Image 1 (cartoon, rainbow, N blue to C red):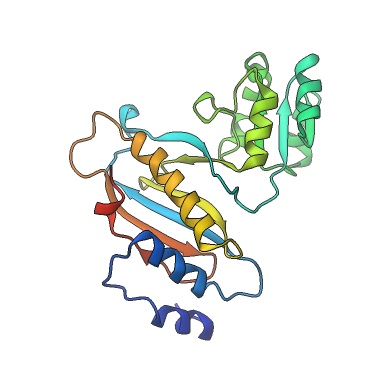
Image 2 (image 1 turned 90 degrees about the vertical axis):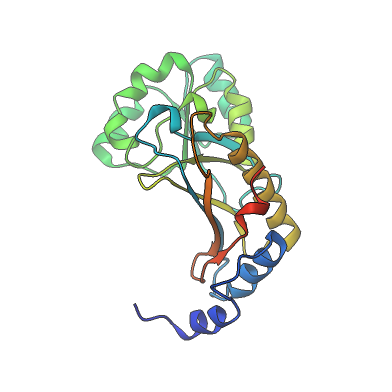
Length: 231
C-alpha cells in the first residue's frame, strides 16, 4: 500500500519496536496528525477475550471527561412526558412508530446514537436488521435503553462513548481530536482504560490486554506499553 509523503515523514518519528508510555504516545500521535482537517484520535485495544463466548463479551459505555470533539446527533424513541424530557435535554430527534418507515424505507440515518425507553423496545426491535449492523441498536449495557432519557442524552452530549468487542476481539474507540491538548487526550485515554480494565471478564484465563495502539485518522499507529496500562 502506497503511503503519502506526510504519512511517511510522520512514521519516521515513531519507532515500531518501542512500546511507549501514554504521555509519549499521545505526543507522537498528535504530532503525526498532519492532515488538513482535525483528525480523530482513536484507541485500538486488542484483547485476549473470545467474543464467541457470552461470558467473555465486553460491552459498556464511559463518559470521556473532555468529550470526543464530535457533535453527536441523538434520536430518542419515547412517548408522552419522556418524549418531552428528551427534547428538553437536547435530543435532535424524538418520536415513536412514525419513524420506522422513515428509517426502513427512506434510508434515513441522520443520527449517531439511538436511545429508547424500555416500553419502546418492541417498536425499535423492528429496526434490528437495519440498526444492528450499523451498531446503532439501543442496549441496556450501554445505557441507551433507559427511563432516564434526559440523563442519557446529557451524557451522550457530554462525550459518552460506547465500547464493545468487534469480531476480531478488538475494541475501537475515539478518544478526542488532534486539536485537543496532550493533557485532554491523556485524560480521556486513561478514563477509557480504567473502564476497559474494570470490564475484564472473570472467566478470562491468560493475558487480557494483548496490545494497545493509538492512531490518528490518517497517521501511523503508536504502540503502548500494555504492562503499564493493566490494573
